[in-house]
Image (cartoon, rainbow, N blue to C red; front, side, top):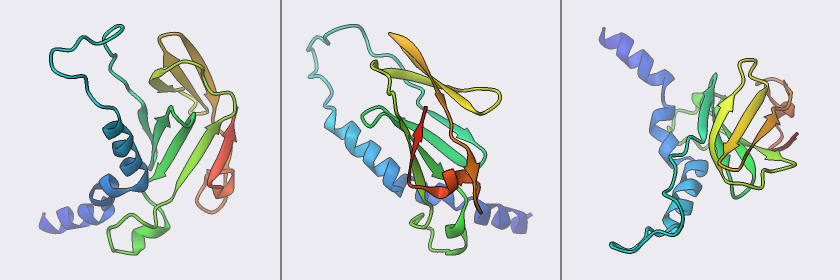
Length: 151
């Protein structure tokens, strides 16, 4: 039983390094820049909506970056899994840049059943993003380019 737990732990090293991954560090820094309202101060506009800007597909996490108008695809498995340092430094991410980004704030992302399209849903509209083709040794988008354009 203990051997099975150890084997499972080796395959899930990403749980240790994921909070320190460059993508999540950037997101935390961006959230720190948004200062909460002072206690007792009125918030302008309607109350904020809960956001669902993340989904998983296979061994990847997809996060919507509204400021950049792009999805960030973080690989949870890859060439770095054999390095053993647990830092996640060898686990790359790809930026899926929306060539026609929505002009409204996104509150939810939904993956289509065919896994070829993503719905970007906001209070003022909906945009559908077509995911690019995958190819190459690790089945990455457009062969592993760091930035890929999406329609």
